[in-house]
Length: 610
Image (cartoon, rainbow, N blue to C red):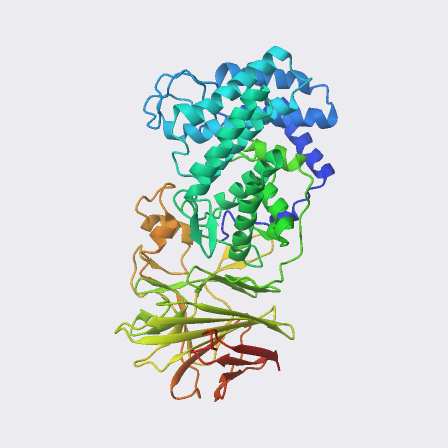
């Protein structure tokens, strides 16, 4: 079974001018064949996200005319624009809409669903999208439509902005991508208004960004992030927000958008595996956007010097939004317009400088969460997630059903590079169930093909083992498929266990269920409004690799040693040394310093190839 949303890497899609002209030519032919007598360019099966879609296709046709001068397009643009202005601009309040600050304002808005009162909660983002489609048409249609129609569209766009910022609460869904999109719409509209009014709109947009978006940033993995649907980051909407930041910087030149985009881009880069896989977020667990991410990933990849284009997008939406039949849909068309207009190209070289929350070399990577526990491990094209035991999630030693992964003090991190090896030492103070302090030292070493993990902790009572991850997915090149196995070797006993009991709060990797599906079942609101990350935290048990202690370790320590990415015999040697602990494997020799560290408490470590 393949995961439905994480498909090809976005930088694999051709993005040269000729490729985009081919895309626009296909859109043109489909749109001209679809154009109804009353001027609609909507997908015939569209029901929701509909208020901006015809106008979005109109903007693509206007861009195609700018690039090709196709004589068939002026009439189609005028007719479809007239349709939007006549049929899709609503001024009477939608019954049941809860987020008004001014009733009966008469200001225009776009509807998420055309039927009155059917789904009014989506009208705010639909109006943001309509504003963005409108300002693109304003920019692209000079000389294409007459002054009267152009002026009417400008008045509607001005009204959209006022509806979003005066007549309703701002960002009522607490969705960062929608809020930044609104700011972008204001910045673009300001350029089309008389000087004084334009400066007023521009200043208002910047205040909203500073006071209503940026002031509400939340911290995760050391980064201050623009919140998304109540969480720090969502792997579908985060890259969309990055595209909005890119466009905001393009049209305004304000450095704050570049600074915040750099922060978000570095954070995203650390989350992504080398293969471009990621999951997690407050709106979706696994769903990835497609072309909507290209502008931000492409521009900021160059700015931070990393190959963000490895991000796996939903390539069914690789060029533009589509309906279930694959036919063009104008939703998000503004993003395609911007990426065609943008001149940035993909930065394709992997980042080599060490980053606190990721270890990456070659085809191996480990992403770490805010507690410096692995959140995703990739080796040999297979992805492992944190496993669950007794409602505790993570990678780490387990004793008497208690996972020693939660830090109870400062976590120390040491990055190392030597002889083609890349390594990271994480020293973490933890307490056992009976409140005894233990120092867990985890050394991660990779040669770019395999990953060696050695975990050292003071001697534990009972029968401890290392919770070493849950095999979940594998890279098939242009697709990601579900798996229930991985190439893992252990110096001690190794077993792949599965939940003994059945139930929604048990996840068996052998089942035909995705992490996202299971997480939504456990969420407080098991619809797309629920928080799947929050739901997943209720997981009691999962499939898990469990590795026993390595034989021959010093008597005062438990040592767990696991190799990901290659099966076969694995017999590391671990010995006390004057400076700490020596670890010898078939590939490297490493030294882990004593838990007390140096004069500043920082752990010592060395690694060299054997």
